[in-house]
Length: 439
Image 1 (spheres, helix red, strand yellow):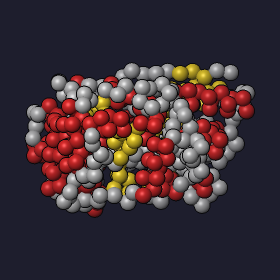
Image 2 (image 1 turned 90 degrees about the vertical axis):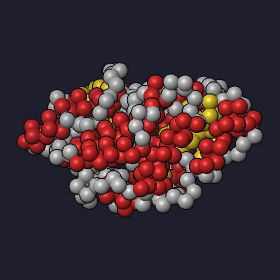
Image 3 (image 1 turned 135 degrees about the vertical axis):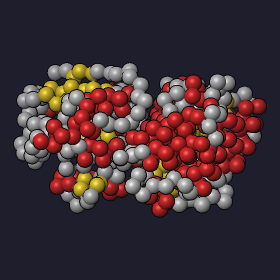
Image 4 (image 1 turned 120 degrees about the vertical axis):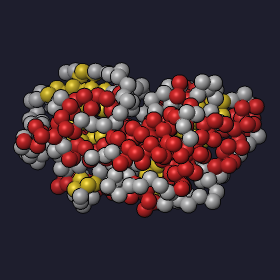
């Protein structure tokens, strides 16, 4: 048996799913009974977000193992990267060709599939009180709960942390920053020690939003943030937004190293600069820990530490809020293969497979209880999981929590701040205008 991998190199300019293209036709089709007997003689298609190395082999091995159990099953893998999966999903949704299983973030991104009638309702199988659901952390399941129903299998947890090179900090004579002001102050001695203080690549636009969302959580009360993510109630006028935008501008100006600005640097280039010890810090997702430090990188695990982006003193938000969200997979409710899709997802989340996901070279913090331990995962992953568990809440990514029009305004605004073509007030004005134009 074999599996097929197709990788798209497309870059996305918008996160919007063309739900209008998939909703009416899909809504007219009956949902497949996901509890019926799977057809173990068919071909199962899966769209993943594991297109990069070394992650792509994880689903490849899963597919091989599953096909050994079911020799008449064929699996087609469509492996995309964090960036290209957005464009690929949009294209497949628009053509009514979403695979049997497909990757999804939570928030508005997931809601699009649910409202479009193409996400299977998994409640009876994966709610916390069920046998399968009981194997997951309940918070992870809640991330894909809408209107008291559960629509996705959370595969791994994710959150954003500053990775730092302990050796670089020692050479510069600095300690881990405790406040945002400390972080800014650390950049000058790091630069003098020969390092780019903070690796940052914003050519795709969304990396800037990760800084902004964490700073929004620090500067804006939680109830205001929740109100503003709903375009029907949003005003985007809390003064904390301007504070956060100004803080981000200062960090990008004083701590990043590209002469032409982060807008001209690929996200992967920033990752490589940190792994190759050209940069002392790198604001990264937990999913990247394994690529930042390890046997294949000059930066070894012993010399990589992590800390949460520091809280700006005197801000009005929550110092214990953390940006992040589990990421998961949905079953296409209209596919005749939906029961087989569910069976594969159960197989993928068995504890032994979850432990493999959490272990090197993948280092992905599985949502399955007991999969992430000192024996299976790196120190950085274990520390990240502890920090997630200690956080007061997890705030999702702006571009998946917002409606497309507002997300696009934030994308453009982050780029404009970096390039200096807009002020914080002008960026906020553009977001307010985009919200007013939402149908």
